[in-house]
Image (cartoon, rainbow, N blue to C red):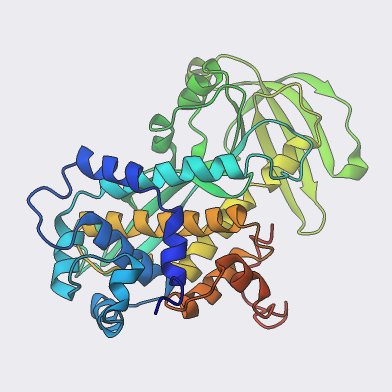
Amino acid sequence: MHEGRFAFAQLMDLFPKREFQQCVQRYRGDYRLRRFSCRDQFLAMVFAQLTYRESLRDVETCLRAMGTKLYHAGFRGKMSRSTLADANEHRDWRIYRDFAHVLIRHARKLYAQEPLGVALERTVYALDSTVIELCLALFPWAHSQRQKAAVKLHTLLDLRGNIPCFIRISTAKTADSTVLDQLIPEPGSFYIMDRGYNDFGRLYRWTQAGAFFIVRCRRNITFTRRLCRAVDRDSGLRSDQTVGFQDRRTKRRYPLPLRRVTFFDGEHHRRFILLTNAFYLPALTVPQLYKCRWQVELFFKWIKQHLRIKHFFGQSPNAVKTQVWIAISAYVLVAILKRELKIQRSLYEILQILSLALFEKPPDLRDFLQQSRTLSPTTFPNQLRLFDF
């Protein structure tokens, strides 16, 4: 007797099968495969993300315990630890990168009208990177320092919805500013960056492309002052100036004038010197936009807490990149679920409920997620509350 569909299967209804198959065919992911397709690999890794599995053997044990339920959840191949390990090791990670971008495009449309917190109608991005430490004995290809290994996750975050639009995985030795060569700037959009992106030759190309940037200035950069504008010091502003570079080499790389805004944060007793090529903005809007950059830091903390990207199931670069991209896909899928079903919960609460109920059969997934007991704000005082839309 049919009693309904599993919550995992209802979640996978948001899975665009046609686009996924196009990504698989692009890189011949299912070529000469008889069992355990790329779709089965993706479902198994999403299951591992949503249920907080710690190893491939853990994933195998839990999925095999489900028995015939796996077929109704969408699995078609036989699950085993060695098969999943081989798939992560050898199947092209770009399949899951391209598919993650398909989900990201869909999610950005859903969150396009999300309030930013600043009176600005343009698209605003935050660009930053985080380091994920690894064991040098297991990941010798990721050597970063003496007796240490790590990879760096460069992320461009759309601040309307906190959706990652661009992700690049590199070794920890890679300079942050090099990622500017990989990005195609959108004319009219704003990019918020920290001091690691003070590469003015690259930023000049962004200015020529019609994009705006706000970057925190390093202390050792010297300027010549061209114009000063009056500011309201009660708001925290200390200066609003038009400047040019004093160093000849830097001036050759960026020959145009820049706007330098100095802001003092009285709460934390910190001074920020910000450079931007947006001269039309009100002076106070510049530090307000820079403050929004903290969202990308919270995003890094959130995914490290709630997704499996600190404990990897494979040791090769292909396995690491596959796991990271599928983790991002799982995050974006839940974000799409939240907006499509209009669920008034944070992503953290949705993930916690799904982790226990993936193989339950709720008549309606929206009602099930919405009517479950609401968590008290003080129940998890150390958990980030970033995504309470």
